[in-house]
Figure 1 (cartoon, protein in one colour):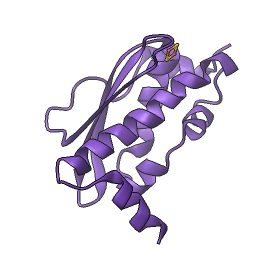
Figure 2: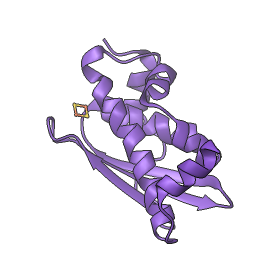
Figure 3: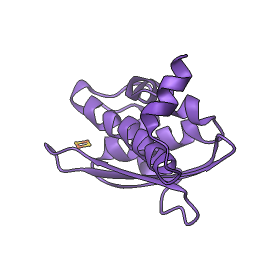
Length: 134
Ligand code: FES
């Protein structure tokens, strides 16, 4: 079943709602369950200074959105891009195997929001990732 942390983030989600001054917005969905996750980021000088989410989805999707936004807040964009769905699930003390796909939405949602931020500046995310590898 669900860990206490999952239940806590489901019952008291952090960073919920629209971020009015977001400069990156990402929306991802899972075609199988039909759940949708929207992630907002505000990036300044390479730091995710604020972030929030709106999730139309299952309890695990809400808990992972909440935890994922907590994990990237105040971090560099590069660190946020490295956040994996496994790390989000681990931070929640695990998810049932059937619910791991929900955490994938959180990872993808964050990447999508950061990608949108770069796109608005005419920069492809691929270029940023490549520069990071060098
Ligand atoms: Fe769809 Fe959880 S069941 S995201």
